[in-house]
Structure formats: structure tokens, C-alpha cells
Length: 237
Image (cartoon, rainbow, N blue to C red; front, top):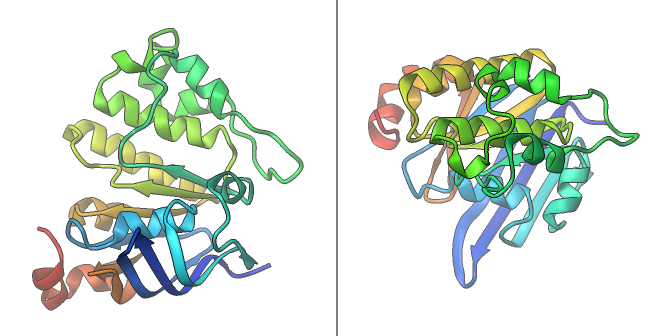
């Protein structure tokens, strides 16, 4: 067992011949909400994909609760307790809300908590009235809620959220922020990528600033947000 839910060391990741991450180091303490900050193209989403085995790893290590998972396929990383909510909100458009949640359901001997349909509807009340609606007919905010809810149905210990506030109305952003805080209170470890510094400051304990595929600085969220030099040079207002 490890004190860190995730530990990444010396990670180099590639899209074909193009290198996207360069000797990246990152530690995510258990139970924390940690945010990857940086401008578009900095390497935030690639870091999450590398954890999930969705990009090529040339060197380095990814450990989940002390277990080496470098290069594992995504389904095995998921079985190790990692849930992933991609930026694209990939719902099953031709299935209903209920059916999407059923697809995501997994219970096994490793599970330490149990998310049910009723619990995710408590977390996302707007979805409760849309149970029979096709996911493809939902708004962007409703699809974001559904994607997170479906991921929770797999009972992860760690959840990766890629740009969860992007393109959403302010009221939905507030709902997502409240959700992140609830998940943390439930004992989940949350790692999210964000360009929205205000949102990140509201939800995160810790932050790591990424630029050109490298972590430049990491530490408590309040300290990172208060550093004018870092904010002006690397973060979108």
C-alpha cells in the first residue's frame, strides 16, 4: 500500500513519433483533489491518457496505490481502481440514461464502496427525471453529469476528470464543483485537468502546472493560485 494514489516518475509519452510528455513527475496523495493546470496543449489531457494507457509510453513509471501499471491497457487500469471521464463526454447516444448507467456498473471483491443508480441520482438530481431519455438528446451539461455518473457506477477509488467545466453554463459548473467536493468527502481521490483557474481554486487541494509536457511547479492550490509570476506566464485567466 502507498500513501499516494498515483505516482508518476520520469514519464515520456508519444503520439506516434511526436513526443508529448517529457520526464514528467507527479504525485497525487490519497483522498486529495489535485488539478493539472496549464494552457491548451500543455499536456494535461495527455497526462490523464497516459495514466489510462491510452497513449504510447516510451519511458517512465505509472503506479496506482504502489502497483506498477505502466503500459497496461485501459480496461486493466480501470480494474485497478481508476475511473476516467474524457473531455469529449462519450455517452452512448442511442441508449437511455438508465442504460448508460447499467453499462458502467461493476461490482467485484476489490470494491470498497458501492455506487448505485439511486446514489448517482442523489448526486445529480437533474438526471433522475431523464432516466428514459436517450443520452444523445441530453444537453452538454446533462451529458457531463451522465458521464461522471456512469464512471462512478464502476466504483473507482481514483477518478480522472478531463476539463470537467469546459463549455458548460455557470449553473452546471457550480453543480460539477459541488460534485467534486462530494466525491472527495466520500474518500475518492480526484485528479482533474483544467484551464479554469477559478474553478480549480474552488475545488482543489493541490495543483501542478504543466507546460510543454513538463511539470514546472506543484504544491498547495492556494500557493499556486497566489503566485502572480506563474499565473501570468502559464495560466489562462
